[in-house]
Amino acid sequence: MSALAMIIIFLVAIVAMVVAIARFGVHPFISILVTALVLAFALGIPVQTLPDTVGRGFSSIFTGIGLVIIFGTIIGSILDKTGAAVAMARAVERTVGRRFPRLAMLIIGWIVSIPVFCDSGFVLVSPVGRSLAARSGQSPVALSLALAAGLFASHVFIPPTPGPVAAAGIMGLENNLLLIIALGAVISLVALIPAYFFAGYMGKKVTPVIKSTQDEVPQQQAATADARGVSAFAAFMPIVVPVLLMAIGSLAPLLGLPDGLLQVLVFLGKPFIALMIAAACCLPLLARRGIMSKAYSITQESLMTAGPIIFITAAGSVLGAVIVDSGFVDIIKEHCGALSALGMAFPFLIAAILKSAQGSSTVAITTAASIMGMFNDSSSMMTALGYTSPLSAALVVMAIGAGAMTVSHANDSYFWVVTGFGGIKAGDGYRTMTLMTLLMGLAALVAILLAAAILI
Image (cartoon, rainbow, N blue to C red):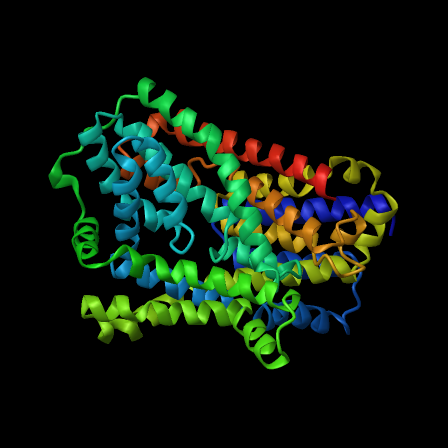
């Protein structure tokens, strides 16, 4: 089969997959998996080896990053149910909010969305923004946009949020989560710079929807009330502990420690062990709220949340395995001049197209990561483009995350959460939320391109 024919088949398959999800409402798991199988037949993978290809791709997620996704989701659920997420927001509000309300909402969103999904985080924390707007005289639209930006930035860049965690696992970086967290923190903060000024500008241009106290939903009221009994220290522990453990585990081999202590620290620094310990740090939150009896139901709900993410990620991994086994990457290697010229813009564009077409940032991240493949696999797209080190692979994860925030519009549930709970008219959504996410994605891409030019 000619190179042109293979490229056309690949593009048609990806377009068909996106259309199936965005236009016909096919579940991403089914759409991605069927696309992988059709692509396998079309590109000539032998029938007798196809089951091994599918099995290898599917199982790799469960042996790699699956537990990290599960424990990250459990931590987020407990912080949500116990009011700890709102307690974190209140702590930041007390520290920064009186003088810099817009900055406070950016920071609150940025912190809360590390463990909690951005949709849930906005519903939980938006009453804090409205209260702060009333006390400070700031536009509620400006504070809502600032909160939305902070939440979204963490959501696409910083583990243990499922999207970047899944991308790290798919691309062979499951043991380098600390690197992803560090880069994600830096890139996400760069993305928030234009968002901060844009939120202030649009706050003067857009008339907010006036909400009365009766508009507060019971979930918001309950979460805010629960937060009064949660200390900031206890609320932040499940976030700080795993980061410290992974940092110590990474630095321990450089400190000349005795073998026994070194092995213990490296073990504790493994991402899924660190997150398991962080989940244990959530138990005092449950005990203080007097809801230890709900631990089972919270875990069950978390597994139901994590399950679809893991299976979509596994289906994406199958797609990646098919791309590798079909020899498609060899064709790319032979004609990689144009793609190499695009550099980090290539994974960014893939993710941006997927995000804009079907709405889900997590699906965009996992699918784009699956197309890129593992950095240490000689037959992957990453190798074809020259991204063969952990640092370069981590920057590709960042580029995918930047693409996955570009842009949020009507097919994205987060778009409707922000406009609905943020006091923004639906008609103003495109010139506020959509334009802001475009600016954030482009700012992040510029930072990533500069980092790549300097570091790799």
